[in-house]
Image (cartoon, rainbow, N blue to C red; front, side):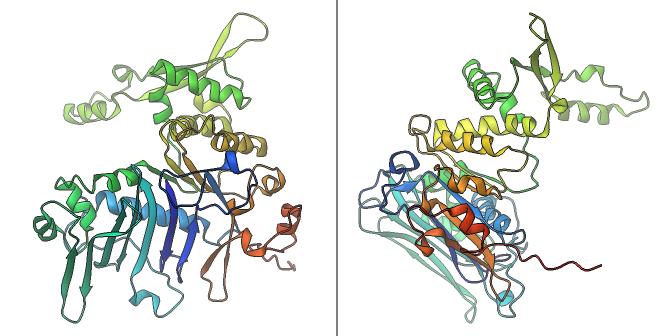
Amino acid sequence: MLIEFSVRNYRSFWERQTLSMSGSTTKELQEDNSFLPPVKGLPRLLRSAVIYGPNGSGKSNLVKALHFMQEFVLTSSKESQEGERIDSPPFLLNELAPRQASEFEIIFIQDNVRYQYGFKATRQRVIHEWLFAYPTAKAQRWFERSYDPKREKEQWYFGSKFLGSKKTWQDSTRSNALFLSTAVQLNSEQLQPVFTWFKKLVTITHGDLISPVFSADSCEDRESYADILNFLQNADIDVDGIEIKERQIESLPFPKQMPEELRAAIQKDLEGNKKVFFRHRIGDSDQYVSLPLGDESDGTQKLFAYSAPWLDLLKNGRILVVDELDNSFHPQLVRYLLKLIHSKESNKKNGQLIFSTHDTSILDAKILRRDQIWFMEKDEEKATQLYPLTDFHPRKKEALEKGYLQGRYGALPYIGEVKF
C-alpha cells in the first residue's frame, strides 16, 4: 500500500514534489474509493489517483521516477559494477541542479508495517540512504548511510532493532549501489518485506508496448482464463473465446546455409512463444472463426494486454502506475476500469492505481473524490509542479470539468495564435 512518493532534482523535477495517497476526511465516495489501512493512527488511503496536465508538463517523468526507484532497489547490487554511472538524470534548467543529488523517498505499508525509505544519488554514487520502520507508532531508524565529500568517506548508522550481518552487508555495498539491495541479496530477512513491496509495483510509461505475454500465460490456467474472458466481455469486447497456440519452431523457414549453432540459438529463444487468437461467432450460426490478436483493434489488443495485470492488481493488492491510461481506450472503458478498482467487492486486497489522462469527462462522472485529482504544470523555471485539486477548495457541486478547461486550476496548455 502506497502512502506517498516524493522526488526532487530528477528530469523535469527540481524542487521536491510529493504525490500523496492519503485521503481527506470528506465522506464523498468514502466506502468505495478509499480504505482503512491495517495500521492504527493513519488516515484512510485512496484506491486511485489521477493526474492531469498539458503535454510536456512532467506526467511521464513521475512514472519514470517511480520506475527508476523500483529498478534501482531491485537491481543496483547485481546489475552494475563499481564506477558505472547511475541512470538518474538531474534537472538541467538550473545551474545548481547538475551539482546536486537526485532524491527519492517513499512511504508505504507492507505486512502491516509502515516504512519510510529513501535515497539521494548523483550520477556517480549514492550519497545518502535511510530506512525507518514503524512496527508500532514509534519510529525505528534501522539504518542510515551518508557520504562526506570532504573526507571522501561514508558514515554508517545501524539501529538496535535492525538485525543481521550488518558489517558484512556494509562492506559489500558499492558506492553506486543501494545498501537495501545489497543486504537483501545477501539474505537479510528483515529487509525482505521492503524489497517485496518494490517487486509488487508495476509501472507502465507512455509509449511502452504492453506485452500480452502475461495475459496469454494466465489463460493457461482455467480460473484465470474465465476471469480474463469475463473481463473482456464486460468491457463490451465481442469475443466468445481465447485460444493460445504455441509457435511451431520446426516449421520456421531457416536458410539451409544457416550455421547449426545459430539455428539452435534462435530455436531456444523462440521456444514457448505463444500466439493469441480471439474466437468470434459467425452471425447467428454455431460456427466460429479464430482471428489473430494482431487483427483486432489497437484498443482490444491493449485491453487484453492489460487484463491479467489488472486482475492481478485486484487479486493480490498490487500497485499499478500507468501513463496516459486513456490512450486507445474509449472514456466509457476507462470508467469501467476505474469502477473495478473502486469496488470494495472486486478490490478486496486494496490494490491501488495511479494514472495520468487527458480524458476530462471523468471529472464530473461521480467516480472520483476531490482528493484523488492532481494536476501538473511547469513553473517559470520550466520545472514540474505537482498539486492536488483540494488546494483550490472547490465547492461541493462545482463543475470540475468546466472549471479545469476554463483554467481555474491551471495545468492547461497555452495555445498561441498560429500565423501563416
